[in-house]
Length: 134
Image (cartoon, rainbow, N blue to C red; front, side):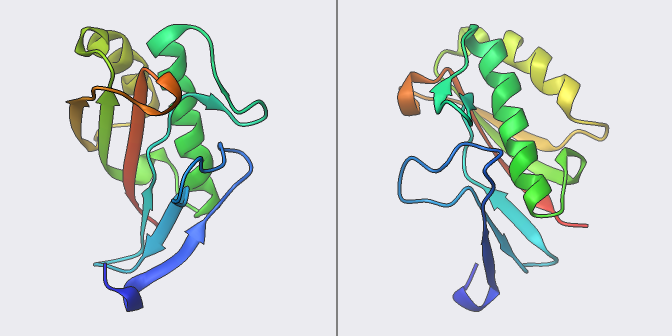
């Protein structure tokens, strides 16, 4: 997006604070009002630590974190049109997918799933999203 189309940074205490030089989310006006989130891992916002329980628990928390960011931008998971999922180990695809499927209403968003050699803080999964703000 060009500079004049970028909207404000979206930030909420209900999702983990950025651990690097990036925003939790950013709105814009490219063919409508969009929010693009940063990738979310399974960090518990109050503790700043990964939730225990492996990829299923981390996926659940990452999606809760995404929902918190979307809520702060007046959107929800039903407004998501595209996600990218990064997995530390593709053998955990099925477990991630079972949790992921429960969170997105039909029609499901487009999605890419990518194997990542490493994720922040040793996470098993990271999810980013594009949503059209209603």
